[in-house]
Image 1 (cartoon, helix red, strand yellow):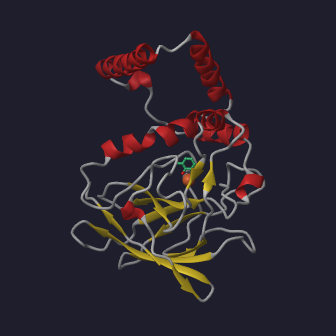
Image 2 (image 1 turned 135 degrees about the vertical axis):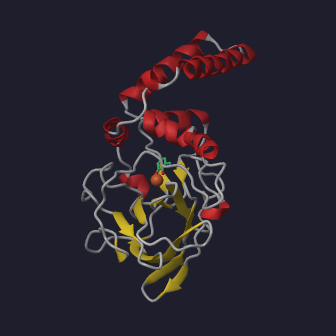
Image 3 (image 1 turned 180 degrees about the vertical axis):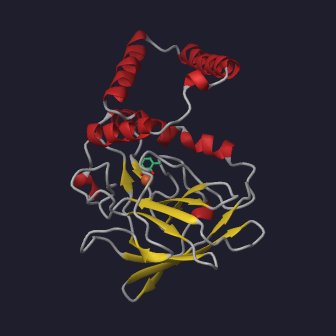
Length: 281
Ligand code: MBD
Ligand code: FE
């Protein structure tokens, strides 16, 4: 796997992900109702206390945890840690009412404002971008089947080395990041390349946890999307490729059978067809 040789340094991708997150105007603890903070903080702390009692956690283990948490912040890997090991349950709870498309986690590498490419076009990419060319066609509809014209599809994904632009060095700013819109019949056609599986940086705090626990560091290859349309709920999803060796043990627990693509060989690369069904807001 070439990604092993080009893996971005943790401090670099982590710091970028932390800065990206902080630049959004998101909710803060100060905005969260006191009753919720009191309830949730007490319950999480009780769960920690219970684990300590049940397993007789030692001072050595407590200090190892303290040192690791300090390093997690220093490496800028709080976004990576939370999105890999916690976000999938947040997403599950947030979307359980939906009738339309399954979604999954956003992860740490979304950047808003990618270049607009219309309803049929290519994602920004380098000359001779490595990887199998992919032509993806689909349609965006509402849950009642109505095609949604003027829906927006934001696409971002890793390159054939498993690296994301703006989070790994030496890649053009908007590489493999594009904003598409649907035509009058709700359809779109997107040209890109197949991404490689993604490896969590091995040289940071998350990599240290993975190594210390004897886990693997991989996510299967995936395309990230945010799909939106007036009057509908925003869909955040990822699409996967059948046969990937990590589809069944994604370190981020974000694979769902409904999000599997159907690649077919084509003249120059492959084609996939996948459409989205949005829930009315
Ligand atoms: C990724 O590319 C990703 O999508 C997630 C969820 C976590 C880490 C890296
Ligand atoms: Fe990703």
